[in-house]
Image (tube, rainbow, N blue to C red):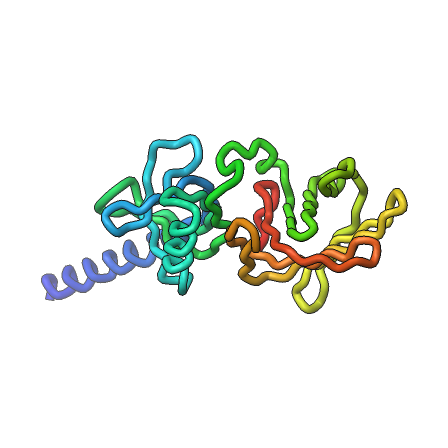
Length: 219
């Protein structure tokens, strides 16, 4: 009887220890910018300013590897990427990045040398004619070839259908910028970003692509 009681007590104590253990918190999602290169059939990400290399697990982003292959054929073997995901341990390299979001892929541009990226909320660009809008905490900057850049205040609204609207009616300019979450390919460079943009500038309609900057983490 004593042996039986001791055995039951040990099970109860073991059960108390088991259920008293704190649950393991899930890893935080991270956003990384860096260079992508293909090595031994595997795409590796080297974050800006670091020596570490991460393998990519793109199973949650269908078509991602095909996007990389097409862009590499057009722009060269080394690409710039702005990605989000969860870091995990891996047998090879410095870890595994399980991808959850592709913010931007490009083969040309300032890449890691974009000094304004960390302060940027959003950048939208288009072609034919070329235009660019950058959003910061203090205002927007409208740039067009052959014209001086305009710094203007703006209002941002999240619309019920999921779109984001940015507008400004300052200094005689009528600016309406609509953004929707959808894959967008730049018609000139082939760069891929996560937002489609439509700009109505003084009544004229322009289309383009956009992405969130480093000062904004929302999807």
